[in-house]
Image 1 (tube, rainbow, N blue to C red):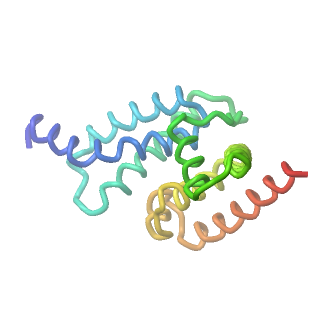
Image 2 (tube, rainbow, N blue to C red; image 1 turned 120 degrees about the horizontal axis):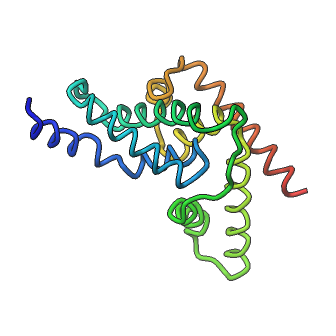
Length: 179
């Protein structure tokens, strides 16, 4: 394979999953700017290793690279204590709010749905990264447990227990915010 075929393969395998890559990096890093840097670095890693992609689930391959790049980037560029940001991209905010407002609504129910979406975003941002990561992969990216285990390099039992704990932590954070 030459450079042209590597570039074509990269375009075919990586680029269709660029939005998902950015979304995952954004949730892990908690910052749009950091996510942009992470995805750029992940793109370079993927391009260098495109010959190593043997087929199969391209999305899982891309998200694995983004996940690993996120953690190595954070270790290199952030202090040991991570400060989590509550700001989300406008697109992610829109997706959450749209999901909450899909039904026919009155102005009052629309306002309630918007407030609930803000609570969920705030609660998600407050979760420790390992729990937030599996929750995002499951609930936002809609990956199955086996694929999450592959992407996160975890045993499937750990994925299941982290998801259960993440959901409990999320419910607790939302309940605490409403009191």
